[in-house]
Structures are given as C-alpha cells and as structure tokens.
Image (cartoon, rainbow, N blue to C red; front, side, top):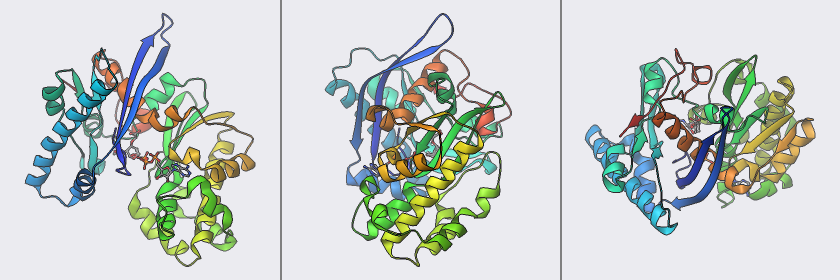
Length: 341
Ligand SMILES: Nc1ncnc2c1ncn2[C@@H]1O[C@H](COP(=O)(O)OP(=O)(O)OP(=O)(O)O)[C@@H](O)[C@H]1O
Ligand SMILES: CC(=O)N[C@H]1[C@@H]2OC[C@@H](O2)[C@@H](O)[C@@H]1O[C@H](C)C(=O)O
C-alpha cells in the first residue's frame, strides 16, 4: 500500500481464516514501512506531470521496485509461505467521471521478481462499472471489524464507513492532516506532533463558523474531498491567522465535523486508525464533543489497517468472492475486482 502522503511503502503480512459460521478472522504477522528513497519520492510526486511514455516507463520501473521491496520484506522477516501478493500500486490519476483511474506499479513485474501469485489493479473495474473506484476498504471494515459501529480513518482527510439501514455506506468527512501538515511546515515541523502546536493556539470563532458552514458539509450521501478543495476553500481562510491559531482552529473544525457524524448516526463505538489517531489533542476534542466510545487500537493496526484490507481483498479475489461494495463506491453492482496473475 502506498498512500497519498508518499512517505513510504506499507507492507503487511497477514493471515485470514473463515469460520464455519462464515466469519472472517485475521492475524497481522509482520509489518514494515519502507521509507521511499528521495529518488522514488520525487518520481511519485512528479508522476502527474509525466508524459505518456514516461508514465509507461514509470509503471514498469515501479512494478519492479515493488517486487524487490516484497522480496526484501520476505527475506528480512524470514517469511516462509506467501499465497498471494496484493498491491494497490500508487494512484497517479483518478477521474472516475471519465471512467479511468491509474495506479502505477505493473503487477506483472511484481510476479516476475517474486514468482508469487499477484493481485493488482483493484480500482479500474469499479470505475468501469460506474463507481468512484474508492473507497474500497469498507468491505474489510464490514467483514473484519463487525464489532464496531463504524471505522474512521484519519489520514490526509478523515473518512468513515458505517452500517446504515442495512447497507455499508462511506464518505469523506473533513480535512485532517493535509491542513495540519501544511501549517506545521510553516513552523519547520513535518507535522503537529500530538497536536501540541494546535493546543498552544487560540481558536478563531468567526473563521471556525465559516469553515463549519462550507458548501461541502451540506451535501449528503457519498462524497469525497481532494487537495484542490483545500487550496480553494480552506487555506485562504486560515492564511489570515497566526500559524498556531490556524492549527487550533482547524483542529476544532475537524473535531466538530467528526463528532457531528458520530452524533448524527448515533454511533456507540468507533475504531479510529490512520496517523491522526496519534493526535491526542484532536482525539480529546472529539471525545469532549460526543458520547461515542472512540477506540484507538494497537499502533500496528493504526498504521497498517489499509494495507491489511488490501491483502484481504487479494484473498477474496483468489476465492472469487465479492471484494467491492457498490454501496460504498456507487458502482452498478457489488463485484470481485483485481487482476490475478
Ligand atoms: N504523533 C502524531 N501526532 C499528530 N499527528 C501525527 C502523529 N503521527 C502521525 N501523525 C499524522 O499522520 C500523518 C500520517 O498518517 P497516514 O499515514 O494515515 O496519512 P496518509 O498516508 O496521508 O493517509 P491517506 O493516504 O489515508 O490519506 C502524518 O503526516 C501526520 O500528519
Ligand atoms: C483513488 C485512491 O487512490 N483513493 C485512495 C486515497 O487515499 C485515501 C482515500 O483517497 C481513499 O479514497 C483511497 O484509498 C483507500 C485506502 C480506499 O480505497 O479505501
């Protein structure tokens, strides 16, 4: 799994079993994040500006790179048995309205290097079926974490999946780390560790009110946010303020929007993962605003839940079982996705 922040490659070696009552269980056996060398960080960040031929080359090169990282992971952890390698690749273009989504990292190269069955290209089929090609993790939330009312992930943006009127629904809630990192960088920090900078600032109530009432929050149903929205709607409001106050205000905003969703759906217990789960300031703000039991699991799960679920989707693919929920992506039907080699 390679996320939007391009900090590294998450590898998760896991085992899945299905009980006679059709309940899935998982075990995370080994995990590793291999930080990208600067060369790869640059290549991935610049990939959106590549020419068509450069992108083709990158697709092959990155596929071989992924294969080599998998080999290294297997070797360093003395892993004996691997049934399948599931790879999300790295998203470069994502335009579901135009029926395409591009994840680079050719699965055939992974197969050539590792000689292990590979599943890749998880998103294209969904887009061709009229879906958004994302989010895909709700199938894993539903089958691997049924004991929680909802699963919240706090990465660049916060997104949630929950069961509502018998269906698994999912949507982006609000920006989290994408905004916090931007302002933390102005104070020469990579991110606002534990929310300490936000804690030291003052909330600007007027700007908070404007943020809370942005048009996006009036949309109901499946919806998603992107960097462009943040640049257009959020930064101009916060740029007027002292950096610590901007951080305090956006933390208050994110906490309020997340708590609003918890209250609206009467959620009793929510599993919280993604780097934002380490932001103690944000978490205590959310807890102040709801009765919901906010559950932060072991750091391994906080950091590797998405990789774990892609591995699970790979397993469902080799068993020819449904691994995408149309209720989450908007596609015309539930389906079994991924190219299996
Ligand atoms: N101790 C911490 N305190 C506050 N924030 C933290 C802490 N540790 C990590 N983070 C935040 O988490 C981010 C990394 O989280 P994560 O890996 O989930 O993001 P991502 O890869 O951008 O996610 P996604 O692709 O799901 O959007 C960091 O950039 C930082 O903002
Ligand atoms: C197109 C794409 O790569 N989307 C990612 C991205 O990273 C986070 C968010 O945007 C989510 O929608 C998705 O990944 C998660 C793992 C998903 O599909 O569920």
